[in-house]
Image (cartoon, rainbow, N blue to C red; front, side, top):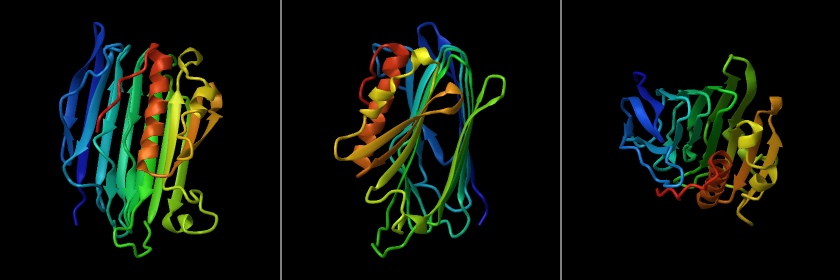
Length: 273
């Protein structure tokens, strides 16, 4: 089977009080509809939904995303729904994301969780370069699903996130590799929880939400959140375990709202999906 390659590339610029999409290149399986201005109180914030017309991620796929947010611009990129990772039969689906956020800019990249089917294998990498006064909110989440309830497991999931400053110096690196068998043992890192999510909030101190506020973003009885200080005083690292996709979505929405409040002085409007 030949490898399939897809590209999703967006450039944002600030034009007056608003952010506009200056350039786009989108190829199958990705799809992009028009951008949305959902927040009257935050006119600079532009929201886009990254969509797929293929029904998920498949074996051997090589997908790439590139986002550049120009000086003073603000963008929120999410997905229309969770993404299924199908049985990859030993050939992982690979996703590579490259991000550049320039001076005073804001980027929230928060796709819905991956849903790992039996035999699924996903390898993701994200490389970002961030100006000292820029803000970036990243979300990476997954859950598992066995449609036939036969106790089958996904194969492997790996993630490598590298954050550098504008001069190229390494600021934060967050990596993991997880096999499906690890979630079925007594030492499973997820325990009884169904969704695991990781977040990075990177910003100068004046544009960061407080640790206490972030900690309170958990959904009582439905999720738990841990917040820690990132190296090099870069911001906050957050881990979340949730009972289901609804609780995970609420936690993500609350964290995104806090980031907007700290960066712009206003909370965003709800995003419909």
